[in-house]
Length: 323
Image (cartoon, rainbow, N blue to C red):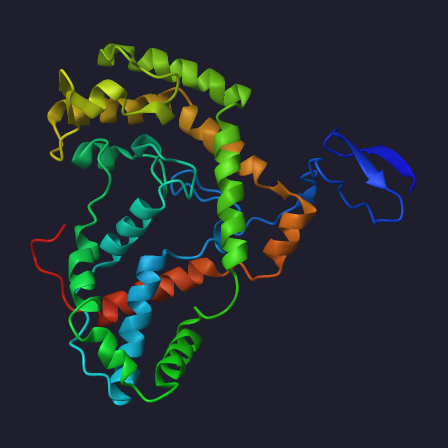
C-alpha cells in the first residue's frame, strides 16, 4: 500500500493511504476542516453556541413531559395511578443542569452550564447554583416508586404501554434519533470551551480580570474566572480533620465577590474574548463529526420550547413558596 503525504488546511501534516479515499490512519488526528453553519445567532448575552441546535433537552424534563402526555393513554388502557406531582420549567431545567454540569464545559458556578454568571444571578445567589426545588424530585420519586406502581404497569394489556409511549413520542417529537448528534455537539462544545481558555486573547483578558479582582482580598485568587469560587470560599473553616463546607445560605461576602467577578469579567474583556474564541472553534469540525451532525436536523431548540409549553399547560400548580 502506497503512503503519500499532504498538508491539510489547518497546517497539520497528515498521512493519506492511497486508495482508501483519504481515510485517517489509526492513531492520527482527523483535521477539523468541515465548515458548520451555526444553528443559532451569535449572542454573548445568551451564550449561544453554533452547535446548540443539536443539543437535546435535559432528560428529566423530557421524562416528566412524556409521562404528562402519556398518562391519559395509560389510564384508558387500565392503569390506576394518581396524577403526576407538580413541577416547574425552571426547576426541571435546574435539575438537568445539576446532573450534567459539564455539558457546556463550565463546571464552575462562575461559568454556569447554560451561560456565565450574570449580574442578576450574582446579586441573588452569589456562586450558588440555581434552586432545583421546582423540579420536585422528591415528589417524582414518591410517585414513581409508590407501592404497587410496577404491578399496575405489569397488569396492563400486552403492548399497551409500548403503544402509549410510541404515540406520545410521536406527538411530542421526542422519539426520533439525534442522541448521537446531541452527544457529539456537547462533546465538541466542551472541548471548544476548554481550548478557548488557552487562546492568547482570553489569557490576556484573564490577567486583566485577576488585576481587577485583587481588591477582593482572596488569598487564593485563581488565574481565571473558571477557578471561582476559590477553595477558601468553598470552605468556611477547618478544625483538625473537620471541614465546614460552603453554606447552603448565600452570604453577603460571597455576593460581593461574585458581583465584582461579573464586573471584572466584563471590564477586562474576558467574557467577550472567551465567547468569541469558543464560538470560532465550533465553526469547523472533523468529517466524522460532520457526518453525525448533518444526519439529524438541528431542531432541538424547537423541541425544548415545546416541552416547556407542555409543562406550563399540563403540570399541576406548584406551591406558592417554591422558588
